Image 1 (cartoon, rainbow, N blue to C red):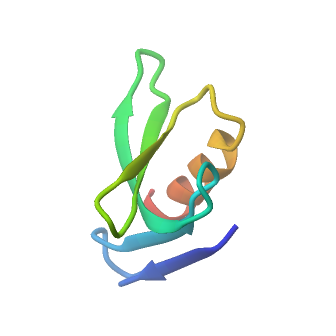
Image 2 (spheres, rainbow, N blue to C red):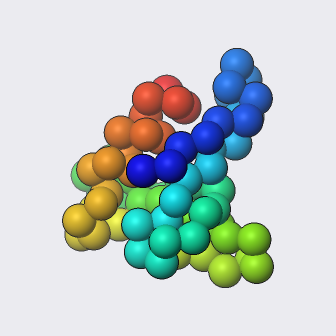
Length: 72
């Protein structure tokens, strides 16, 4: 999976990934947490369209590892 990090030293870094749903490049954002503390994610594309990645998606584990490794 394509991963690029801008401003890697700050908490406000931008994580750019290739979307597992549509194949386009976008910015990875945490969307919300469910009652068990698992995060859902949004990948926001250049045309302001977004794809949601939830715990039910098959690529959620990979996206979660990328987010945790860079943000937390």
